[in-house]
Length: 498
Image (cartoon, rainbow, N blue to C red; front, side, top):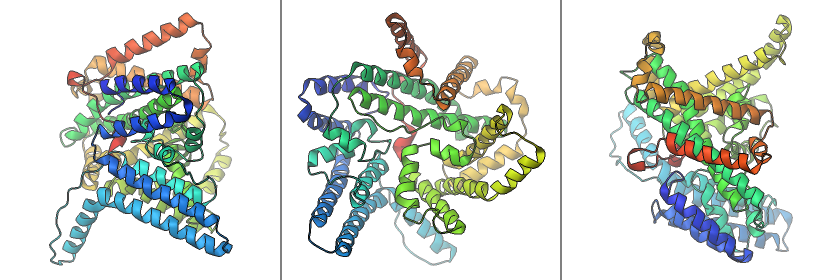
C-alpha cells in the first residue's frame, strides 16, 4: 500500500480513529494488526519474513537477558552474549543475502570464472526482492546490538516488540528507528494531543507535496532522458542528472516526512531522516544530513566496531571506505551501487587528507570562510561532487553509467538550454516552469530548516482562519498539480526497491 494511493487515504484515517477509541493499554495490538495488513497489501507471504526476523531477534534479546541473570563470570556472560548476537546476525543477514544478493553473487561468480576460462554450469536465479527487507532487517538487528550493549532492556512482550519491527509508517523505507526511541514509546503510549496531530498533518502535506508534485514531476523528465541516453546526450543528460539529485531527495525525503507525520498523529515521534543535505558545505556534512538513520546505523554498528578513528589515520580511512562500500551494496546488488558508495567514501578520505593544504591556501589567499560567497561556493562544489556520484546510482549498471558519462562529455549541444528542446522530454513548458517554481519552494524551506526556523511553528502561530486557508490551499494545490498517473495510479517510491 503506497502512501500516495487512495487505499492509504482510506486506511490511515480508519486506523487512527480506532486507535484513539481503544484503551491505551491495547492500542499497540491494533497497530500491530494494521501494520501487518499494510505490508501484506504488497504480498501476503512477505509477512512471514518479517515474522521470522522478529522471532529470531526477540528470542536473541530474551537469551541475552537470561545470560545477564546467570551467576557466571563476566567473561563467560560476554562470550555467550556474543554467540547470541552472532546467531541473530547470521540468520537475518542470511535471509537478506538470499533474497537480495543471490543473483548478484552468481552473476559475479559466472563472470569471474569466465575471465579465467573455467567451464562451469551456474544457474540463473531470479529471486523476487521483498519490499523494505533491508530496512526492517537493520532495525531488528539494531535492537539486538542495543540489548547486547546494555542500552535497552530485553523486551518480554512479543507483540509489542513485533510492532517495533513492523510499525507501518516507517516499515518499508525508514527511517530505521532505534529501540531506545521507538520501543520505549510503544511501551508508554502518549495521550492524544491536538497540537501534535496538527503538526503531523502539516508534515504529511509537505511530504505529499515533495512526492507527487515535485519528485514524480521530475521523474517524467529524468526517466525519459535516461531511458534513451544515446539519443539525449550532452546537456540533456547533464540537466537530467542535476534534476535526479532533487528527484531522489524529494522522493525519499517525502516518504520520510509522511512517515513522521503519520506517526506523530498517532502520538509517536520518529527520528529526523533529512536535514537540508544539499546546503551542506562538504561531503562529510552532506552525509550527516542525508538518510541520517542509515548513516548513523553504519556509524554505530559498523564503523565504530571496526575501530572508527581510534587506530590511526590509515585505519580510519580504511574503515570509512569499507562503510561506504557496504552502504553501496546495501542499496542494491549491482556494481554501480558499490561504485557509488566507493566514490562517496573517497570524497571524504581525500577531503580529510587535503584539508591542511586547503587551510594553508585559504590563509595564503586571505579568504574569509564566514562570507556568503565562500559558503555558497562550498555548497555548490559539494552538490556537484554528490551529483556526479548519483549518475552511477541512477544507471541500471556500471556499464550503463560509464556510457552515460561518455555521452555527457562527447555530445556538445548547449543550445538546447535556450531553444525549448528541454520541453520535449515529457515536461512541457508549463510543467517545467512549475517544477522550477516548486524547487524554489523547496530551497526556501531548506534554508529555513538550515537556519533553525520551523515553518510549521510559524503556521501554527497564525489565526485560525489563516491556518485553515493555508491548509485548504495546500490540499487543492497538491490535488491539482500532483502527478497522479493515468487513472490516478500512484507512483512507487524509489527507496522501496532497497
